[in-house]
Image 1 (cartoon, rainbow, N blue to C red):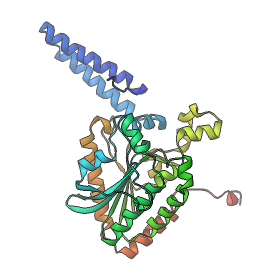
Image 2 (image 1 turned 90 degrees about the vertical axis):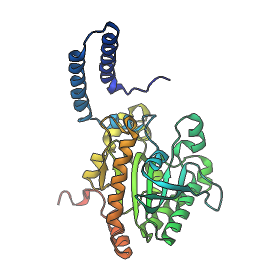
Image 3 (image 1 turned 120 degrees about the vertical axis):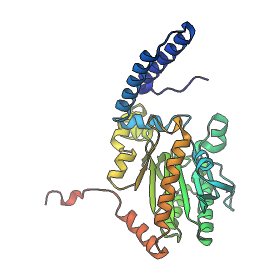
Image 4 (image 1 turned 30 degrees about the vertical axis):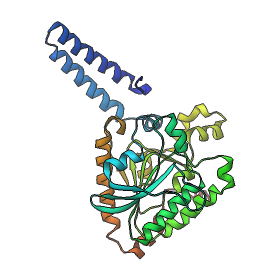
Length: 324
């Protein structure tokens, strides 16, 4: 299988190939190539630091969409223990795009809820490409209420282009299901930690995105609409998605500045797909830190702070008073 290479990473790959060629040449000819290899490795490291220190929003999107990027269940298996999946919304069916169940993190019982994309075509079809139907959001709410009943903190994982936009979703009330979740999560009497681990798209992400702490991985994105959708609306041309990404400011750095998120979870320099174990370790540390903070607050204060957090979120100007 051909390795997926992002366009801006091609110079790095060329250098890696040269290094490998020198290693093979040295081994084959029994020649010491250590000096030449060290020089190229130093050059490679400098190039990596330079490229990844000034990424454009669309380049972040490309890293986020890497086919080998860890998905929700990868992070669960690496950062949590004792995961027991719970199924169904008790009304229609079990939505495979929305996964939930009980687990432990550092020995602490929690309720996990998240959106799961597939790793290949077959799994993507089964998971509906991580786009949940109304029953997925209703399953999520059922598990949230269960967590509240047993005083379990909730940890959610966001990774979706959005809720499924098909006719059947509209017929079964996807907008109402998401709106209901927003209302109920705002007043749920248990701590909620939200982790944006990949693509955070539109209301599909917000349906499990109201929490006391919003964490976001370094190369994840979070926006009100997909970049292709925004380009199609703004310019009638979905190929201008890179421009849309720049306008939407969807990166973790952008969103931390305007207080939409609370913390950026670090990733390996070239992305979580390069070292899933290290990425999961960073996520685990951030989640434990967040849980320690939110569980130290009384339930009444927690719910009040959560409400105020979302009421005061973002930075904006009121055009009515600009010229006064």
